[in-house]
Image (cartoon, rainbow, N blue to C red; front, side, top):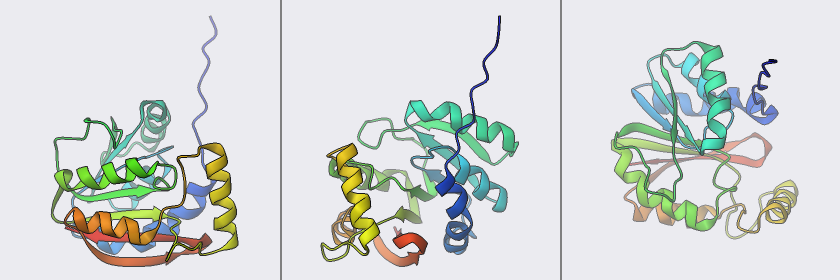
Length: 201
């Protein structure tokens, strides 16, 4: 009987942006010990960041369909500080009972429906330690406007694929964060018209 090996998933964008994201978030994680990554995707960011920051325990999570790929990346990396994925849907009652020093998520908010983002901020406080940080990478609109033509085209593509997906407004996200007891620490400009928003508890 032939055994079919599944191909390890690979995202070119994750490969391209992992170095600049690490450079942007590293200073916020120097004195932390645990991170919950929400929406780990392929697992590429998790293994890269965990390798570069061995003092961190990096907890991956995602919907069940992504777990096998994440596990393959973790297995191949052979690191002792990146943990197998938790099943986590931000809008369901399956959030971890553990709390973390930091929460990280990349390229997730624009995929999520608005309700998912609201649920994210409703729950995030329960898994974040005092003085913890929340770091969100991706595109955002400001004052209801796209920051570039390419983001406008990307938003059109998102809505065509799933009408509930869209680039979210920074001001709306920040309001949700403040309602959750978080304070904006930094809004970092990134390549390709992306940002990293950092809040603290």
